[in-house]
Amino acid sequence: IYILMHIRPYKPPAKRRGLFSRFVRLCFWAVLPLIALCVWLVADGLRENIFKADAIVILGNAVSPAGKPSPRLAARLDRGLELYEQGMSGTIIVSGGTGWEGVDEAGAMRDYLVAKGVPVEDIVVDSNGYTTWDTARFTACWLRDNNGVSAIAVSQYFHLPRTVVALERFGVPKAGAAYA
Image 1 (spheres, rainbow, N blue to C red):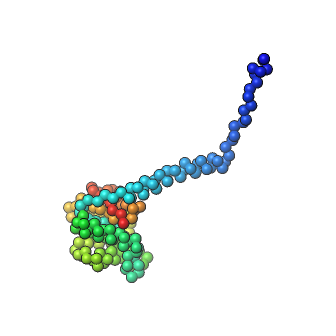
Image 2 (tube, helix red, strand yellow):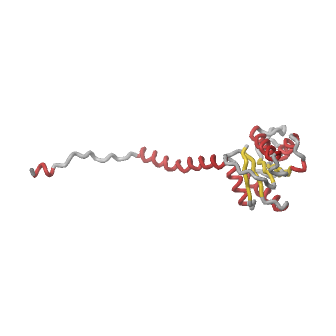
Image 3 (spheres, rainbow, N blue to C red):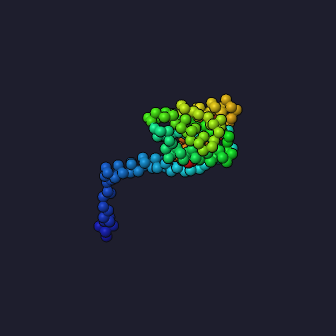
């Protein structure tokens, strides 16, 4: 009886986690926040915020050496034109710099919109919009100088959250977004 009372069932030794297993777990926990950020970025960019504004701001993108907007830029311009025609604003700010093509993006954007029927006096050209921050700075200054307080940014969905944040940081009280 004494021996039976002190016999313990066999318990195999605990498995040691290998270096590879630890590496996989570390990668999972390191990448998870990045995946969550990407999901948030897409969801936020696909949520439009459209209202009557003082200006529609179309951010630049590549143009051909002949001055023709790339398909991505043409989509932005068409979306901005659509908002303009719906009466969301009477002013369109086109912003872009001179890229490797040697063509002023903002000038090409203006020409595209004028060819589509927008009066040239309704278009404000920012040829120093090399970055999103440059565009936001220009837009905020233009709005202050023209007693405006609101703007709708037009770009691709993945670019809009950053653009809205930039506009707000430069003092635009009401910044909306519309994706191409």
